[in-house]
Amino acid sequence: MRQAEEYELVFASSGQPAPATEDVVVVHRTDRSGPGGHPVYTDDTGIVRAEISDRAEVRMIASGGHQEHRSAVQARPVD
Image 1 (cartoon, rainbow, N blue to C red):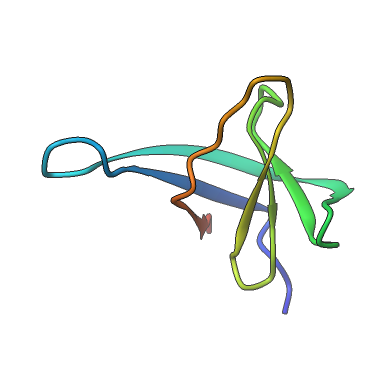
Image 2 (cartoon, one colour):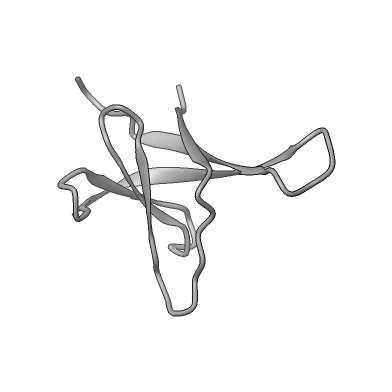
């Protein structure tokens, strides 16, 4: 299965009053692989980095010190 060149990373904000809000960041495939052997995707700034599997499983990758990643992240392929 071929992976998308771009994904939307969706960060759901569950701590907010209903309805929950979403923050969306578009990431692009790089030539790097993450610790799980899957492609690494990054946003245009290089700050948001994620390894995304062929099943759209997301592993956030720190790009600097003191980053805390939310645990609820979904990847949606961009057409």
